[in-house]
Length: 173
Image (cartoon, one colour):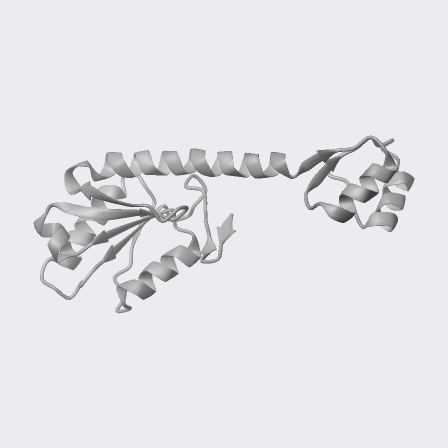
């Protein structure tokens, strides 16, 4: 999965599911609160904290490029309001979340992302899979439409080699 900004990893297979990005981390208490959130979330999720000296914009772009499913942004104003901003990688949706319900909200977001991404992938696969009944239909479809073709095949290596020679298509099982 991917888009113009980089990878979009499904939450269940992402090496890092949540990236915590402190905003104005040099302000008193911000980095400490970010570390506290990391410790809280580590029991349920694969979490990292970006405490590098890079700007928040750079950190956001880096997190997006790597496909990390959820970004948690926390800054001084968020700490005062006992909230943070949670951003989904797949669609960029931002949600303000109370720090008291952060674990449950992230779990809900990750599960929703997993379902949404699977459904989009299935829809894309199904809309790019074609059924053909003749070799002429096969050649016409392979020349004009990207995707998969379901076709009759005798399972002979000679037939597969001929198809590959004629169309550059290869069999999938």
